[in-house]
Image (tube, rainbow, N blue to C red; front, side, top):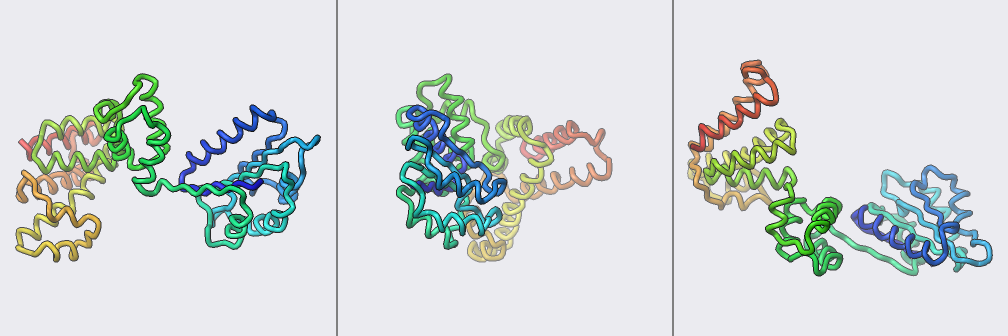
Length: 315
């Protein structure tokens, strides 16, 4: 029996493989389980021997081979070629699991393997719909739909991080909603940046200072600073072009905004003059830091100086 798991998420594959090993272990024991985690470290002859050799007394044998079909960088064409030759010769007593989170689907080996497979699972978490569907199935009565939407946004669709955070919450809570997510989960830097910038553009100094401290507690302040400038830059340019009476369509094209075109249509409480001054005051911090004009030129001083810029420009 040949099983092929082709998913775009390594965590899901490990979870699926573990469930197969657990069931097999309960029924047959651990003596007849072979798990080849890195095929490139094995002799091809050893891998083929395991695939072709049944267990003694005709008991079932489970052979798991990770990263087959391989991704383009890890590929061993000779190994795949040799496995292709013996697919029809694998004994029925042998249960084979080929799994990969980054298979090269263009290869002849991949296409041949799918033809021979008794069971194929091809699951993707690349879209938010697939991600929600899978999480709802896993935690059907433990989390609200709004809670799922919130943690997916906070963790930027990273399945592994979402599962890790939810499992920790379920130790304390029987049911999780968006309120619990907001109280206990720290957003990833990207999500934090967008929320933070919204608070800046709405001239909300209280939330800006509160969120700033939360973000830098979990993130390097210089990394945050660079992200902030990179994301503010587009908004500053948009404001400048609007002041010059350039049309919204032209702004999108000139700045090559594409999937960020929605920024052109957004309105904020902070006017362009204040936004421009805030942006250049932040840039000036980097110049002072590099020229040793900050008092201590330390991370602590840099944090203090950023807060001062926010206070002066958003008061």
